[in-house]
Image (tube, rainbow, N blue to C red; front, side, top):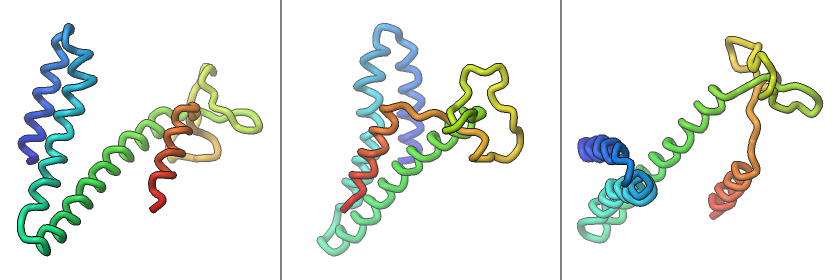
Amino acid sequence: LYHASNLISEGSDLLMLVPSLAGFVGGTVLPLLGAIPDGAILFFSGIGDIKTAQDTLAVGVGALAGSTIMLLTIPWSLSVIAGRVDLIGSPPKPNYHGRIKLSTKGPIICEKSGVGISAQSRHGAIIMMITTIP
């Protein structure tokens, strides 16, 4: 599955080079190709007798959930670290329009630097928190 995932990734990069298909490829083909390995993991996890299938399916679903969480968390945290700017005023607001955007170098100090959050990001975060409630 790892090799197949790499092949899908390389092929999708090549598909994006065709300008007339870029919208269709980015909106339809790539999400579909990204879902195929996930579906294969769940499908093959459920093969076998009932007891074995239940145990292996639980492992497959757990692996899928873990990989999805990792794929959401790592880019988000890297974008927060890379996009942080100085916070000014009271209450603190990001200084996106200043000449020096980030004056503190070195360790991340949460009280002196940060990022702004859009209304869409806030709405998406609320939906994700609500969907975690069992």
